[in-house]
Amino acid sequence: MRVPFGTITIAPRSIELINESLRSQRLSSGALVQQFEEKFAQLVGVKEAVAVSTGTAADEIMTTVLHDLGARYGDEIIVPALTFVSSANAVLHAGFKPVFVDVDQSTFCVDPEKIEAVITPKTRAIMAVNLMGKMADYEKIYDIANQYHLYVLEDAAESHMAKYKGRLAGSLGLLGAFSTYIAHQISTGPQGGVITTNNPELAEICRSLRQHGRNCACHSCLLNKDPGAYCAKRFAPGYDIRFTYNRIGYSAKMGEFEAALGLGSLDNLDTVVEKRYQNLKYLMENWSQFSKYLWTLQESPYEVMGAHAFAIILNKDAPFTRDEFSTYLEQHGVETRVIFPTIPLTKAYRNIGYSNQAFPVSQYLSDYGIHIGCHQNLEREHLDYILTVVAEFIRCH
Ligand SMILES: Cc1ncc(COP(=O)(O)O)c(C=O)c1O
Image (tube, rainbow, N blue to C red):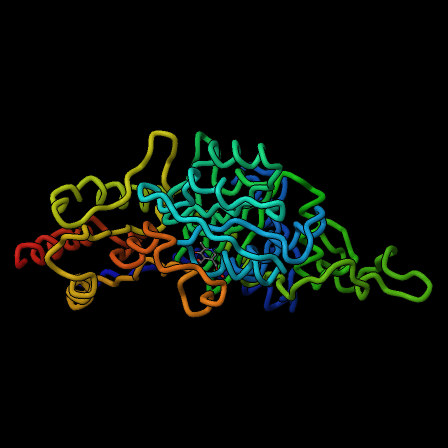
């Protein structure tokens, strides 16, 4: 049996919308992107959603907005040591310095107890990342942020539809950043991302930043929907606002095909979310039989976890290595991914100068963790198969 890590469900409506878009030759960001943004904002329960080319671009733009709020090049942003590399790269690309903090073993998210120690007069924001569908502890994060006048940014790439104290992921930070890459619950296909916020002025800045920082500030560009239209705001003597720039931005628009896939994905979302959540719960509930050697995340009373993937961590005294375990799963058709490396200790970040001992929890999860799929195309027989393969592996050790 094969148990792939990720999957995409393409709705018939997406195919119709893509065909319509091809027939109309309207391929760049237009009416479908706007519809997708409106539905996404409604879903997350925020005023605004800004669709962009990737989750990485969402992280970059969300962080770059801080320049409009008074941050200066070289200021510091607190980032968890364990995350996908984009979260930290975005801070550097936006012109800030990432300051890393270890994660909490029970959440895989930034450990609020360790934040205060790294705050300096240059700290401007805390970027919380909801890793593996687990929500960061926002109450504690805001206690610190409020005390030190810091902004809270939320990387929600891996937490679609997760809830913290009744609020959906993407509504907890000043700005939230989603990836809508194939394997996520809401998907726009091979790439895509969305920034969410309750602040329309910040949404406007994000719309400017996704198009090179241009001066145009309309919620939705008339010209993007009707290429024959005339925009009265566009020309003033000596310039065209589409080619004047207020800030240093990115080339990060979402196109109509991605929005078409996203709209179909939203139509189907309830079914996908329910199926994935039930798959995650089934694996979590049946995992205690392996507790001598392996453990997984648990849902906390304050949250509903997002069913991004299923994390498996080896106890340090397990009589087998992480590689032996994941090789066995792969050989039996169960696709695996490692948990991310500890970002500040990767070659790319070495020159910042952190010691190998600075992030013990992150390092443990990086060295001893893997994750596997719990997606909507996995049936009960796939899940039982995973449990059987793991039981068989453990029986041999
Ligand atoms: C936590 C986190 N942040 C950012 C990203 C970047 O998203 P993308 O791959 O769409 O650029 C990812 C990837 O899914 C992620 O897991």
